Structure formats: C-alpha cells, structure tokens
Length: 133
Image (cartoon, rainbow, N blue to C red; front, top):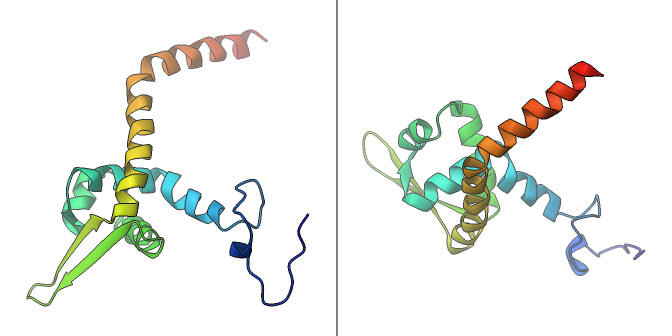
C-alpha cells in the first residue's frame, strides 16, 4: 500500500476505483446515479433549458435536478450557458467528456430497457422461491 506524504494527493498515483479514498468513486456516483444517468442520456439527444430538462426527466424534483446538473458541471460533463436576457435563460449541454460518458451510460440504460422482460421473469421466479421457503 502506498503511503500518502504531506503535499501529495490521491491524483499523484493511479486511480483505483476499489480504493475507498479514490476520487473516482465520487465521479462514478454522479454519473451512475438515477438522475445522473437520465440527465446524461437526455443531454445526449440535444441541449436543454432547465425547465425542458425537468419535463424530459420525468419525476426529478427541481432541487435534485439542480444538484445533479451542478455535480456533472463540476466534474466537467455538463456545460451551463447563462444568457443575460429577461427572463433569464440557461442552457445545458454536454462537453466532449460528457458526451463520452453519456454514450456509456446510454448503452446501459437502453440495455436495461430492452431486458426488462427477462428481469421481470427473474424477479417473479425469485419471489416465488422466497414465499415457498
């Protein structure tokens, strides 16, 4: 195990997702959270204004959408562009890094959609075993 010295950071060594102190875990959490995935997949379609994105990602609260967008912006996945007009206009889109991440999570999200029948069957079979035990 590598020992941290004063003045060193976690980025002074190779990222290790299995290390509980690795900063990649926080990024993974932002990208793979329910709202993170849905925001990235939606923004892969096109840029959105906040209210449009909230309608597109059905069920997300204003607070959760704002927090998700802020985290994804901080991580370099989302670009926030504010325009000095009345009423204020803010557009959200993906950065090149965000587009790359969105392609991965989009594939997973669409795979889940396509395999829901198999998942449903597995759940029914599991629940049937659990009630007989």
